[in-house]
Length: 183
Image 1: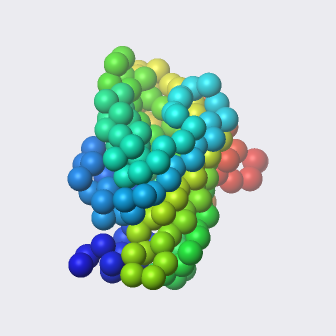
Image 2: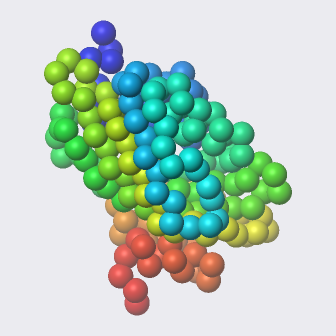
């Protein structure tokens, strides 16, 4: 059975594809039935429930409800697991998207804490997401922001790559600061 062969990279890539492409049916390949989600949102620019339990509820929060509000989503993990099978993986992330209502651009970053199953089922048991920064920009400047995101290696991108090519837009300064050292 395919679910039993999932590696950390497979599970994370499948989640990102499911979320970014609004494909809720893919979530069962990444997450166990009894999975958990914890969210810490440290910004007022976006809101999510603080937790969800079970594959159906986690899928609703991370894919279905998210896709009701956002499109043109690009999510990047800023480091890769160094092993196929591991109990835990922590990485920073970067995301950009446009709001379906009005077209405002959101660019955010934070951390993912991935917890994988053991034994035969290596799918995700728990995902903790911290949203540290979320910048909201007017739709009029979507072209340079979306062009930047589209040019980054997807879904695995080093922070230095994103930092070096970020558009010189003042509103993205908090993102640039998260991605790398200040200049």
